[in-house]
Image 1: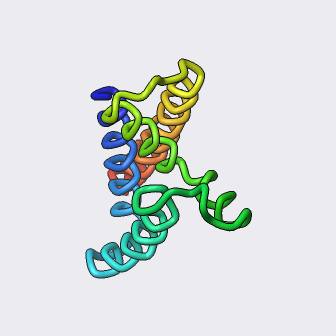
Image 2 (image 1 turned 30 degrees about the vertical axis):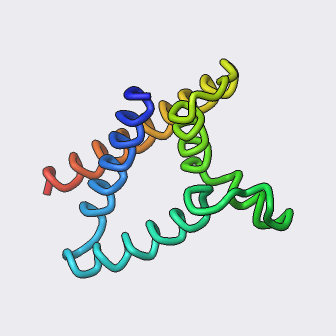
Length: 115
């Protein structure tokens, strides 16, 4: 559980750092981040079960990586039986997102410091 939380926090910190380097000032940053974070949060399974929704909304929620993180953490906290494949899928997804976000952040940092 701690590894999943760490990877999620690392991904989000790299993503927000990249966004802060891309945008001109903090007012635009706050606006853009709210435009990203709120839809991602509401289109995850954090507030409601995705099984009761229509097929199109269920698909959108399934494509959201945070849905998988939330579902795994929920199962761990409730002490349900976890499938190894499900856990590996979430770990690989988070590792991939972390690497991509870290590379993007590093690229933007190098570009900003080269000026």
